[in-house]
Amino acid sequence: MTIDNIRYDDHAQKLYILDQTLLPNEEKEIELATAEDMYDAIKKLKVRGAPAIGICAAYCIYILSLQIKTQDSAAFCDELEKQAAYLNSSRPTAVNLSWALGRMCNKARRFEDRDIDYIRNQLIFEARAIHGGDIEMCHRISELGLSLVKDGDGILTHCNAGPLATSRYGTALGPILLGTEKGMKFHVYSDETRPLLQGARLTTYELYNAGVDVTLICDNMANTVMKNGWIQAVFVGCDRVAANGDTANKIGTCGVAVLAKHYGIPFYVLGPTSTIDMNCPTGDDIKIEQRDPDEIKTMFYEKPMALPGVKCFNPAFDVTDHELITGIVTQKGICRPPYTESLAALFK
Ligand code: MRU
Image (tube, rainbow, N blue to C red; front, side, top):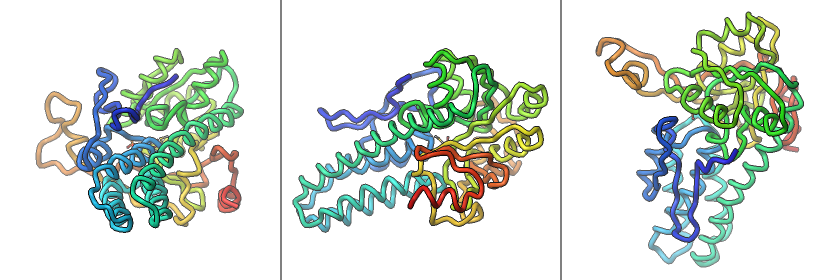
């Protein structure tokens, strides 16, 4: 299944994204032309999912590089780094954003002694390499993840870690989509994922369109489907994995992991190595994004669901303790506990 969630038009030198806030009702591309458009698109989740944010940010830097007027290469790199810092401030938790921006800025600096056209060429090569690399990584993660389940299994997933959140196949949804292409049948339970409903709006949209047997459940029904024996594995994505294996992912993920442990169901995290932050020792060091209370009270409702004065706590992510995670599936292999050793081995 191929969805062009991020599309760079080489001929027109324009960047487009599929506006994910409009899904599943409307499939509409929007152009990201200015730094403000780009910041807004990331902040408002028009483009979302850790790898997709990174890919988009890489193309954004290239587009912004075309708008820099100076002919001085060092000043050009300074300006690029300023723009990257601005984009990086849009969302704090997914490490892929700073990872991709860092790759782009480092590339420019490496060729600081060359002319600006040369640097721009290097930047578009780098953005394409980040994009192409993600497609390959997702495919490998999908193959490895597929080895963990068998035909007919029930799989529960939380939030959206499919093609929309990455490039192709996705991470948590990758094995399901790849297995389906090979003729396997899975029964997927998709948590709706309050408050922004990525599971309802995006995961079921992707799986249903790919012909997968998908059932939408409210977040508070995960216990029931597990207790009924309908779930053989949990697959989730990740926004930042600390060096000890603690994993930040969409709010609610940790609760699913606790339930899975209770019922003896394997809980797998799937993500590329670009989501592993070896500079972050534990989950306590991961900055969790806090979002607007109106997302809980008013968004998606015809009328407010609470009085205006009612306080809301709206963290976008939680951290799942490494002890609750059965395995972390990366493109370089499946890491098992102890994660301090198995994750470090990926980077040797
Ligand atoms: O706030 P979002 O929608 O960007 O959160 C997305 C998630 O939590 C995904 O599970 C994660 O980014 C992995 S996407 C492959």
